[in-house]
Length: 221
Length: 270
Image (cartoon, rainbow over all chains, first blue to last red; front, side, top):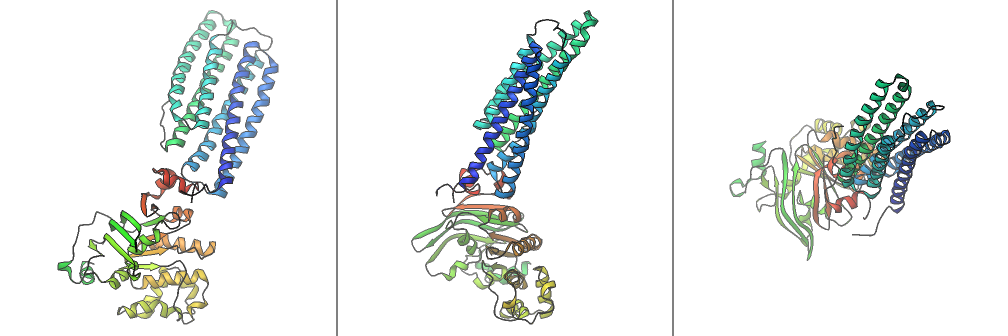
């Protein structure tokens, strides 16, 4: 075969990949900070999450623009086309991860001046699992390694189980003491957001499977 | 149609006949071609579907034009060429000893890269093929039908007696297509028909190809991969004289199965 052609186009594809990777890192940081903010009831961390979310949004716009430019100017096909299609899809997932982190921040704000019902253990663990899922999904994208889907699905089952477990625990608190309802409903919101983040990580890795193999994964959540 | 075929393959009793797979117009079977000692086509096997557009793509020198020219025995005009294998058209082997090349070319018309109208009037360009083939048709009728099918009628209907060389490049190419259609072929071969044309003329030819497939089987060689993606139903990718991959165009351009195809169409070599 001859020498590589269309060098600058392939460099642009690489740049696009770097941008998605950076956006993924920010999304991961946003979850992490939002949970730290929740555990410590720290408004400074909520502000940091807001800043990160703005950056995530800026990446979303920039990546979309770059992807559309590449489609218009370079007429990508085959794996390149699937790669760009994947970028366009997963930035929406990453953007949603940022938004849910913000929503957790809003919960923290609503908890200002109050105390947790108990030391938070399960929620940070659930958050840790979702962060791992997002990190794995972004790694799968960057490395083109669709086999990471198994580890992600495994984590998702744990996250779903934790959701049920925490939900029941919070419910017990609320039944036993109506004063705990205000805080309890906020915890339920947080675990709902984390569960949705886990679903977005699944979406991302499913797109990576398509990007790598051309096969669409039909995952019943 | 059968009668016409029997006429075409005059010595039918000595002519081998096969049952064609459903919807297939032409079959290429174990085709090898040499230019002198150089083997330019290596064991090509391909099935060309009726009333569909098949694009042949691949880097320069891969043999795509050679393969196209095999489909109506145009390579026979080159002295050093030797062909082995079979090309079936409607069940008859066009490389059979008894087959008349001229008749084959009447059934399998060709349009070339550079528009090559004769230095006659527009209408005589169209009618010429009928004349030399002894086809008895109404001149006005065949001129109008062919020019309409080639989407050129509206542009030239008031100046049919003008010299064809006065037309623009794009119009000349559509005239050449109309000329090929005049003798009512079954298959039309196009060898980079748009490479000498501007984008507007190219778009007109591409629209035309889409319309032509309703009546004809079209096989197009193109260097322009986006053109192949736009106009064809099936795509064949060739490399160094071999057919590397053949499939539906959407599959070839979205998810090629061969690494070599992937590298070529994404511009990683070529």
